[in-house]
Image (cartoon, rainbow, N blue to C red):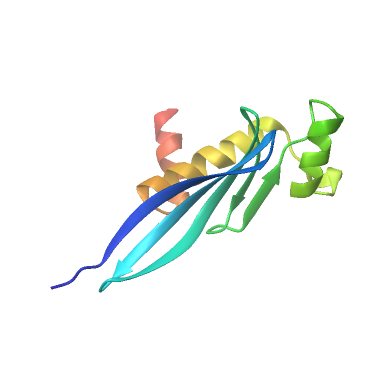
Length: 120
């Protein structure tokens, strides 16, 4: 009997008072031997999405600081090079694509195609 299955776990980690990390993991069970692969990490400052790491697609994005000096210190941990930071909308778009890909367990390009169809 084949017992292969994939489960998703979501873990919250408080890194600092105003920084939370959310890990989206795929847990693969293959003949009762589970293995875990972190697919996506989302970073929040309070309730604002400030960064994303999509391990499956080698994408890392951090927002441009639109808040204060304290937030900038946190963003420096994610992306020290301020020239590499992007607008919040770009981080949100990538997070939406990566999260749907992780939760639906379908490739990134298929999610993009589905979102394009929705906007037609």
